[in-house]
Image 1: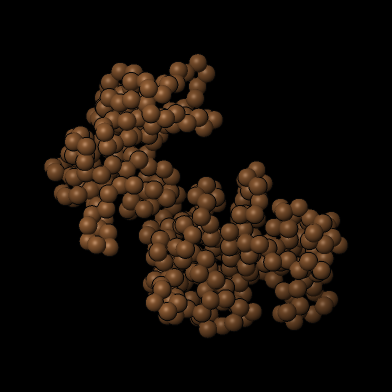
Image 2: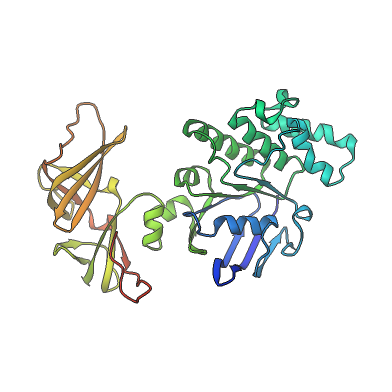
Amino acid sequence: MARLEIDRLTKRYGDFHAVREVNLDVAEGEFLVLLGPSGCGKTTTLRAVAGFVEPTSGSIRLGGADITDRPPWKRNAGLVFQNYALFPHLTVAQNVAFGLEMRKVPPAEIAPKVAEALRLVRLGHLGDRLPRQLSGGQQQRVALARALVFRPDVLLLDEPLSNLDAKLRQEVRIEIRELQRQLGITCVMVTHDQEEALTMADRLVVMEDGRVRQVGTQQELYERPANRFVAGFVGRSTFIEGTVDAVGSFRTAGGLVLRCPAGQAGPAVLALRPERVACATAPIAGGENSLPGVVEFVSYLGAMTDLHVRVSPSERIVAQIPNRAGAQVPDVGAHVHVGWPAADGIVFPAEPDAAGQHQGVA
């Protein structure tokens, strides 16, 4: 394992910036997840570390050594591709051995290394199979064994679970996390799936438009998002546009006046996490904010139910309530009250759009 340092990494394709001035410091043995929508720059960043993308500017250091200009095979980095990239004509053992052969490892050392790598991923009994004879989960583990067999300083995972079904994804992500902890290897993973990121990461890096928007633990990003984008991408939020016009006072575009944490005066966005919003048939006592409304949509989610409540002609708030035995869930059209403590709202200054106007809330 080794420390990974990325300093002002930038990648341009003509006038298009895929990555802009990215700075990251990944500690030895840390599991860092790059999270963001398609096109945000997370995969470009990962492939620059692997050596498959040449940076326009900036530097990459691994274990204290500058690897920015080294070819991929001279970086001690293991990469698991999204599509696994297994050779269909080679057996499982031959696929795992390929990287060792390219590194000119003596033949006598290859077999025991391959056996150990397959043991780690619980595929020791399938070394003679071809990839087409394996399930998707087994193919993913072969790709992981191939990346680990030469004991890399850093393990790079590019959307490694995207080709698996939902149940198998849950199982394999736990397996990867436990294996990473067992080996103590430094790991960087790319995903657009926030549940994967929240489950697996020591720290998250949220990216947008080639930039890092926030870095922190799951709790830090969820409880204290730095901006509207992070609040909407990590977890779920209802966004209400309006104006902070006094300390602790938020006036919505629909004319409602709400209590909120103190924020910078001016155009702002109030974010509310659905599970922090209570819903009842009577006004919410002691909630500081209590608004009458009408249920417009009900979404059953198993353990929870989402209630979309219209509180003004221009504003609708989502309240998430637990599904308990005997609990009464309001129907569409029911008159209810929603409420929340002022401290549970998160206020962000409204961000100007390209024309310099403050953005509304989608």
